[in-house]
Amino acid sequence: MLEMSCSSIGVALFFLAVMICAISEVARYHTKHFVFVIISAIWATWPIPLMFFRVRDWRNALIPAWGARQAAKVIGINYQVRGKENIVKDSGAVVLINHQSNLDLCVLAQLWPILQRCTVISKKQVLYFGTFGLASWLWGTIFIDRVKKEEAQSTVNSTAEIIKRRKAKVLMYPEGKRHTGSSLLPFKKGGFHVAIDSQTPIQPVVVSRYYFINDKLKKFDSGTSYITILPPIPTKGLTKADLPQLIEQTYQVMNKVYQESTQEALESHMESLKLD
Image (cartoon, rainbow, N blue to C red; front, top):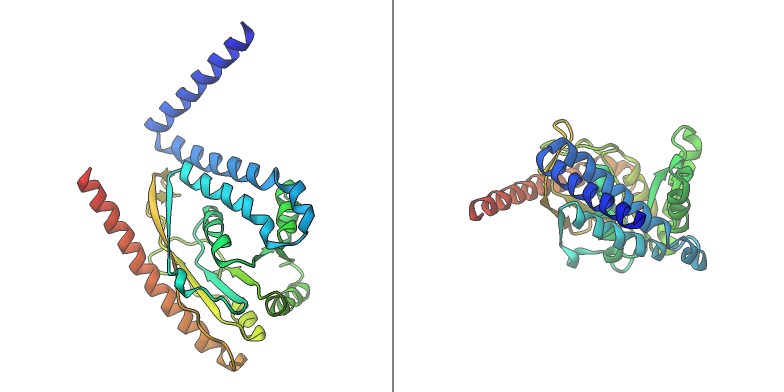
């Protein structure tokens, strides 16, 4: 009797939550973020025992990445990856991605199995985020202490060696912070220093704006985002004197595709509304 009662209460609470989310945009916004965090945390945690068989190996993130892709589907985000023919195959690369939200974890999850030999640079505090921090370390995350500038610079310098030795793809956010405006923010120099030091190409990746999410209005609908992998930009033979030109070239290419793909996503969304 007690088990039936608890089960009935659980079902009732589930349907109540669904009704509230259907009525309230704010409730839907928070619920989707919560569901995303929970699903991602579960899929990052349970494979940890398996990860100890190959410590610091990029392949340890493949199962958590699969879980994050499922989480994206559950909360209504459809990612479409384009430009796979442009992926750097014979060397490492510095992969530069525009940064919009903590939901960009889903973007990394889309790219991880496609690009292969991936790693990311993350602030050292993430290492202490319980089981997620442990999992991040086990799949090869490069941790950087931003407070200690000399140590941070040393980590960035050693990243160039990691790229060359492992033929790794280091995924970085050149804007330095989250942004959802009509144009990309100016790029920081860090990733470009790494690319020149390692003499490996830059692989630009552009994610169209999340038009279906508005953090100020607490609105989170379903929608499609395009992930466009652009042709690599070579750095062979470049020196630090070429840094400004390299940054400008990369920014112009990525910003153009960001605006175009965002417009394409919006037009596709509006067309689907007309058909409905």
